[in-house]
Image 1 (cartoon, rainbow, N blue to C red):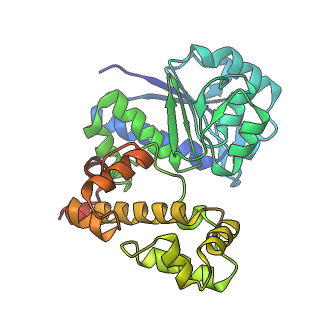
Image 2: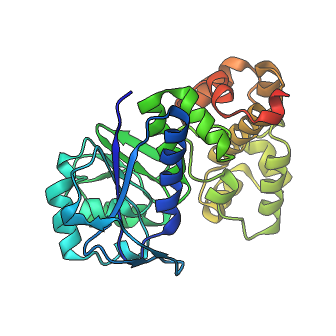
Length: 320
């Protein structure tokens, strides 16, 4: 197996989990394979950096003294909001020579500022996707996935999504068995597919202000296998279908149909992760009716089939 070097860029205001999460994944893979990743950290002047949490990290060297790595990892944090021009220049000059360029969370803002994301599909922390797209119109921002691969470029959503991305990179380097062993050691169990959404339906949608609509939201969540057409939901809210659909979207930010789709998908995912129920039973309990309808929904939303999703993300308790 080939030994690979990983260089993590440090700066004042870095998010400590963006650094430690991926580093622990690569270090765990080194123990499993017996072929260590060469893990290094570096800052502009080689001096200690202060994390957003108040922790202090001591880099291994100055960026100028670091060799070009196989994998260059740029974490996020409040320090990305006003990047040091010298750091931007270093990234612009050095990053193109790395075999793999990775950002975690708002580290994507640093890469974009150096012109390294132009023309690429990327993601970042959900709260900064709009800013990234607005400030860098040449970048194709996808706000939904937890991580995105585009050629040698890999970008992840906020904080813990960096662990999912690092596990995917370990799987790319050493195979699924090694990545799975590392994930279990970190009590992650199985890595999430990259195009899994950053948020659940309940977090994506706002809570309706009016009680009848809040009650409908709750009823949908509790009854994913029920009759959830607009007419039935409108009747439950004592509104006309047209008025209900308009009010629901205005107060939650999602159409009733989109909200129902997300709730059913999440219900099916939980059953696949946490139970041993067959695909047919899961599809019925989640409101899809048939395995084929559920398969189409999974492929459209997650880019994977229910069976593959279960294989990747089933908890150990469900297999006992």
